[in-house]
Amino acid sequence: MKKINHQSPDFTACEAVVAELAPYCAGELDRTETAGVEDHLDICPECRAELQRERHLRAALSGLPLVACPQRVTDNILREIEATEIPDGHTARRFGKNWVAISGWATAAAVAALLVFSGWPQGQDPRTPPQGSEYSAEDIALARRQAAASLRLAAVILNQTERSTVQEVFGQALPTSLTRSIKVLVTPPEGGQG
Amino acid sequence: MNKNDYIHLLESHRDRVYSYALYCLRDPEDAEDLTQEVFLRLWHSGGNGPPDQAEAWLIRVAHNLVIDHVRRRKTRTRHLGQPDGRDLEQVPASLDSWDHPDRHLERQDQRQEILNAMTTLQDETRSIMMMHYFQGLKLQDIAALLGKKTSTVKVQLHRARRALRLVLDTEAFPALVSKRETG
Image 1 (cartoon, chains in turn brown, blue):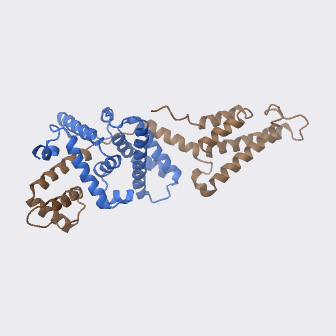
Image 2 (cartoon, helix red, strand yellow; image 1 turned 90 degrees about the horizontal axis):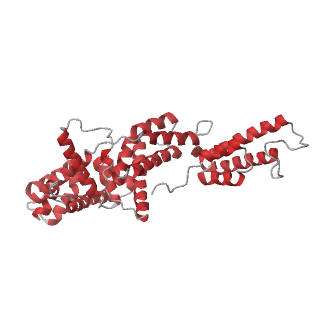
């Protein structure tokens, strides 16, 4: 700050002082700086008027009421973090740099398992075991459940674009319950607000 | 950060973040979206820093999102400065309960005038004013949050005050406009 402890106000000193009025009113100046501002204010009516304006503005804005955040915002946030929370209680981001690789592998494994155990894309209904299979119906049902769980997890940790892609590409071949799980996670496209 | 810590932070700071967004954006729906985005980013960031730094983090993210949001809104040719008055009609989390009702209304009108006038300021300047006057952040903390010099922030506030003087209603703000009248 320009030295402002002088006998008569001048333009440059006033410019320096008015820039200090906000921190002066907030009590952010040290003792020397405060004394410098007050010395100038003693002899400068223009800067005293500016000080009044600063106080007026401060009073108006600092007195703005805190507005209660609507409960639906909190509900949406908690719902969203529930969706991104993986079973061990960590957030998805904690995978760090391995995040993309893990989500990719999870998806690939889940889709591969579904394809193997459903017989797709040979045209069979993916929910009925292929004829002549060396696996029992029980094995296949278990594998499907595990694959579905893996894909459901993958759907949770994938981003919106990836989830949409999975749904788009494999939607016809996936069990309805799984498709529904993915659909729930894909938020509607932007455009509702303008 | 575990989920309990996160929920505690959410409950402690949601009103402040929402109010800041509301007063900056003047649109409750936009303020809700922004508040949600700020806290989701906190969650996805892992929030591994000290809890006492979480507030600064939230404010910085909220500020950046406000600037981005206003920029996007401008490109969609939706005028920011169309005050609709909906913001102050909402139920405040805390009221000046000690005020006489008339005095309370008068204060509310004055605040509305100032908020309207602030829409003529630069986006960043408006946000800095809200950080300092409404959020109560020190100028040096604002400067640190925004990667600016403290002197730059001081000058921005001073220029904002000068700019407001030019647009504020003289009757509502005699103290703020007296210089214009006499000058």
